Length: 474
Ligand SMILES: Nc1ncnc2c1ncn2[C@@H]1O[C@H](COP(=O)(O)OP(=O)(O)OP(=O)(O)O)[C@@H](O)[C@H]1O
Ligand SMILES: [Mg+2]
Image 1: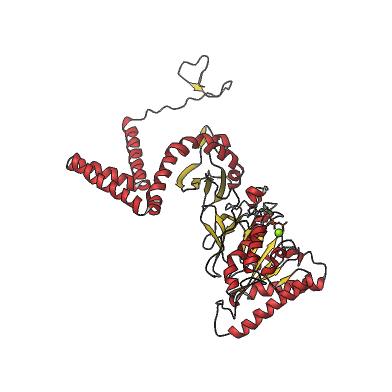
Image 2: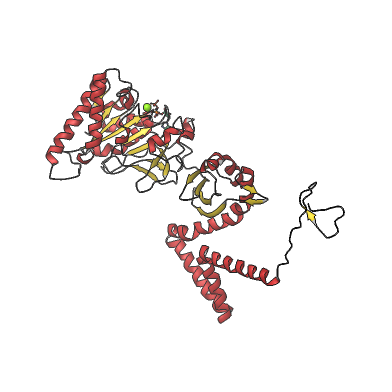
């Protein structure tokens, strides 16, 4: 507060009590014209921003108003009515297109105006994401809201000097302030963040095993669902896949969903699944599906892997100079080598000779098998380099529930956790979390949350009954 000093008659004031230094703030009267110019500038800037952000709404409203002024209200009402009818027709004819271009944009506008806008400043302040410097309050800017059936995606500009980690730590605050069932923060370019507020978790309950496909195909196998409700298809032919997750994370459901999706192709002779089950707890259950191509002891596993290497080398000799990619046929089927808990064969294998042979075979398969139709799908509990030195030879990786935050980047690559792959935060309860994981889909650096369908023991028994080697269709 300004304070009048004793004996001071000339209107001098000080802002700091008890000081001998006296100063008077200079008060300049702003001429009215300056104020008017500032207001006019703000008005123009606001209109320009409105036109840029909501071009369609401005065009419709502006067009109607112009018609009204130029002609009369009947014309304006008619033209606007026709336009609205066309929009309505689009809704009937192409509802998805309508939703994408109009529906969800209107929802986003409404949420920005009535939900996020009003709650933003107080939520930021209570979450401790604002800053106050010399009495001026800085609030991160909410740039854009996009909505879809399952989540709202907010683009936010952080304050200068703020770290994305500060936001990631405060996701519970954001959730309680803005609503939603879960929230995650991913770093975009510059000082921008993407805050995804999930409103309806499509993956909250386990998915039952998907129906066995009717056509025999090795193409991407549908094995579950993505966070946005769309099917999740895993490519196995033409790549190698590593599924990493702590014990009980649901690695088995990935393995079995892949096998289930490939059953018709196996029956048609286009795919051979070679099963390595060193723990004897997973693939042994459906043994009859694999016939002789099943191994459990380290010796058998080594033999089977080396056999796969020989198949691969024989094909490479045949293909050399003739073709560069593999097309599965009954003569040259796609060989998918599935290894449950690969560390049992590598890091935890006591026999050094066997360990060396297994690692050499796995490394050969993962470096040279892709183009000749030999793929590896391996499950792993502990993704550290010491445990699986060749983990980078797998082009595609899936991170299920992991014990530590650092393990996420080990599996999905640097920066994956910052981009929102919170695999260490997946629920430990089986109903909510088993089978849930993060993957990087082709063509996007952003990890996507997925859940594999759960193939129960009964499902596996039925699979064996229909497709098992003895008594089955092949
Ligand atoms: N996709 C899923 N949906 C729902 N529940 C699942 C799913 N996958 C697995 N589960 C449940 O979680 C349990 C453990 O799964 P699973 O055996 O596949 O784990 P794991 O990752 O292979 O563990 P470990 O490394 O110990 O073998 C299963 O018995 C099942 O009850
Ligand atoms: Mg397992």
